[in-house]
Length: 256
Image (tube, rainbow, N blue to C red; front, side, top):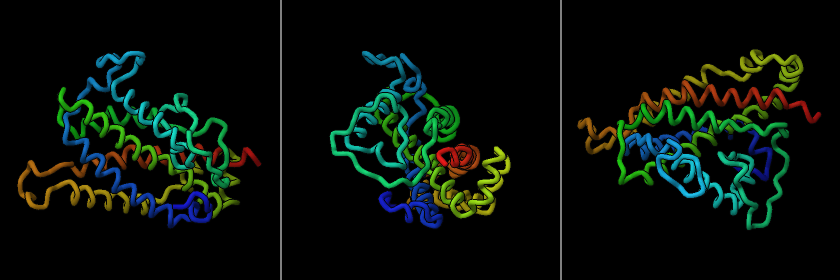
């Protein structure tokens, strides 16, 4: 997807292809995380003492990575939303000029706090065995960062979906926005058939990628429970994407 060319970014068929590729990234990230125990201590502030930082060990790694990535312009890209926006330095590379693709939002849509909360409280218990592994705390947290980043990008991509749908049904969407009809907006952006297809495709991917084909008949060969990945999308990823879409559309006309 070329963010210098709005016509490619707002083509709904291209957006869907990007979302399908993101499914692969998310499933593989979950598989990597599932090899370790849940490790509750790495999400507990103060459980791992860090000089000058009061948050959790995982938050510290996530913030430090975002600081480094910000220096090479990662968060100038329209599809990247940081978890620690207030901690980011200016890039060391020259700035890039992107064309206007999304309309500005007064509060800059960012629901990463909700994403991190459901990931820690709901997803990890469904894919990881309980307990601690002190020798793999760093590896576990690094896998968490990859999971969170890929899930966040997928959910916040709803902004592009919303803009594409607005442009394809401008009169209808404008009326709903002006009426502040959140239920109507959600109904307009919901496609039950597409959602069902996403869940079925995700199940097949999790079943295929989550088992070693040479050991398919051995229970220990299962690296990820397919139902856990499907439930994550059904209960969290798809609903939160709609939250992003509705929030974006409610403010779509502000600048106009």
